[in-house]
Length: 295
Image (tube, rainbow, N blue to C red; front, side):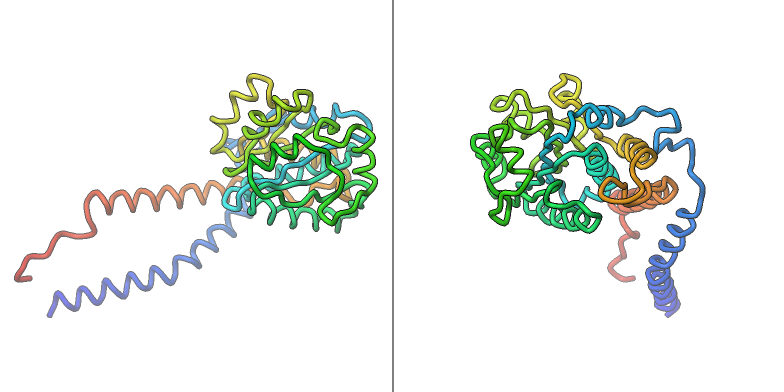
């Protein structure tokens, strides 16, 4: 009887903890958001950091009114990590007067591209500055097909000022001054380096990618096949902060959101580590001693 009472008490405690845990998490994140930056995390790289600056330099070195193709193919799971850097890169392009053509080769990338196109248009990017090349199914095969032909219409079948400027240069990928690849798992900058560079060797490729892709991306950056890379969260935050500090205060050249705060990220890391430790301990030691046949 006492054992059953003890089991009931523990069951009530577990239910109480499960009901309170979400509120505690929200409260913790709220408090962490209000805390000042933590220098030891160096999320933004510090005031004198050059992390991610090569992307800012590459965009700043583009010619007057450059033509830039943006491959928007992040995946939904890791896009929150690179969203700030991605939006900063788009703002950076519009701040230097770029004419941007956005395309996607993955369903997840297309969903994100639709949202970003709508946001940029709401910010004032007109058809003379921004066009949608749509979703091209087939992954790398579609990318190769794009490299082998000319771009004559946008996703709606129209040819506006951007495509007219592109046609005056030949109409294909070689007519662009830069390819900016926002990469994920399905289509990444690696696809552009391996499939596009042999076909369009004079097209510079820059990239924004989540941290887990860094071991794959860094060799291409070291070899110069990527002219610029924001490949970690600190690099992306440092780059975006730099663009926000020197960019416009309105329009598509404005970075539309503040940089990620380091304290909530640290809290999330601690919680994730705690969950992993608890799960590992439960697997290793079991959740309780086995009951005897007669207990």
